[in-house]
Every structure is written in structure tokens, then in C-alpha cells.
Image 1 (cartoon, protein in one colour):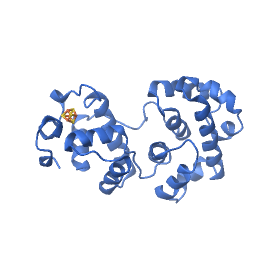
Image 2 (cartoon, helix red, strand yellow):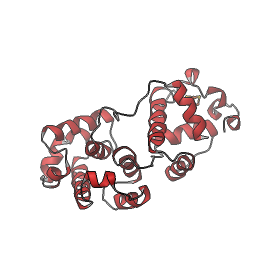
Image 3 (cartoon, protein in one colour):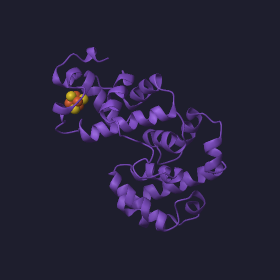
Image 4 (cartoon, protein in one colour):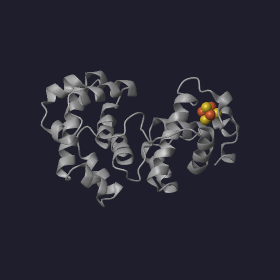
Length: 221
Ligand code: SF4
């Protein structure tokens, strides 16, 4: 099913690119952004990232040695600043323990191995870990986030958990680039068309297969 969704979305958003990850290209900045965006909009997380960059803290060595209160003050635009500051510092320490970002990027540890380690870091849950793995550490991973769960539920009428959605997508896709693109396209569709409230079904490519509109969902699957 996810392969067909992917192909449909590719055709619908031909110019879509995940190369710049919503304006952030640096791997460590993507890791930090994955924490900062928790429970807030990306615009707020981006402002916090910019504050960290201005302060010279957007790299693990500097962030590890920074005072938690100072970091918290800088990232205030993203909210939950004390918890996020502590998580950022713990993540930086983990990166250094692993030998640095280059070692992580060129290492042979699998997505599952790194995921288990990331999930041990307080303040990093499954969605943050999967985002870090996919977009910063370039591993075959994907988040079964709210956009994916909403699209699946509306298309099929079936509600799946984060883990069920994640595993279903990983069963069909194995390449890093495709997984990044699948997630990015689902998010784009969720923001532009299949919105939480008032989805724009009239312009949706899935309209003739969507359970929400009482079509036969299995004609799509
Ligand atoms: S038809 Fe409507 S509810 Fe169904 S996937 Fe498209 S936008 Fe979402």
C-alpha cells in the first residue's frame, strides 16, 4: 500500500525535495532540530536552532560543555526549554561517546542498533529517534508520525499505532532516500491537503479510494 501512496504522491508533488530538510542541511543541526520540534511548530524550532547557531553551540563539542540554563534560555522559542536543553546536551554527549558525527555517519552500526541507543537517552522518544536516524544519520528509518497515521486511517478506516505504521512502511521500503522521500511527501500532503481539520478532499489524488469519503478503500490497497 505505501508503495502506491508513494508513487501517487511523487506524481502529485513532482518538485518536492527533502534535500534541505526544511532549510537545514547540517547533520548535527538536524539532530538538534529533531528535539527542538517536539510539541511545537517547525517555525519555533527553527528560531531556536538559529539562536543556537548564533551562540556557536550547533556542534556537539560546544553544546556538551554549555551550561544547561544558558542553552535553555537560547532555545526558549521552541518551548519546554529546560527539558529540551537537557536532551540536547545528552544527545551531544552521546555523539561524542560514539566518536563524533563523522564516525557515526561512516560507521557500520545498523538503524536498529543506533535506535536502541538513542531511545536510552532521556528526552528522545521513538519519533525523535527515527527522525534523527533517517535525516541526520542516513540510516533506513522512518517515523510513523501523526501525518502517516492520519492518512492511513482516512484511506482505510483502520487506526494503527506508531509502531505498526513504521513497520509497515519499513516492510515496503529499504533505501534511505526513498524512506526520507516517502515521509516528506506524506508530511507535505498532510499539511497541504489531508489536513487535520477540513481536509481538501476535492483536490486529493486519493479521493476515489478514500474510506473517509465512503469509497472502497481496498480498491486502493
Ligand atoms: S480524500 Fe480527503 S480524507 Fe482522504 S486522503 Fe484525501 S484529503 Fe485525506
